[in-house]
View (cartoon, rainbow, N blue to C red):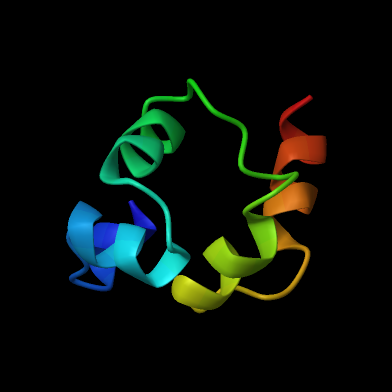
Length: 61
């Protein structure tokens, strides 16, 4: 998990994304698709290339 590799807690990531911790948990559990609203902030918080979350979703389909 990229968050863990960056030594970020769920709380740390939630603060960076400006969302509740429950949102981070839902993303990690696959109950929420971040590609729409949170993708750019999530990519920035996790040091991922822009568009990489959407690309990963397309390759998984």
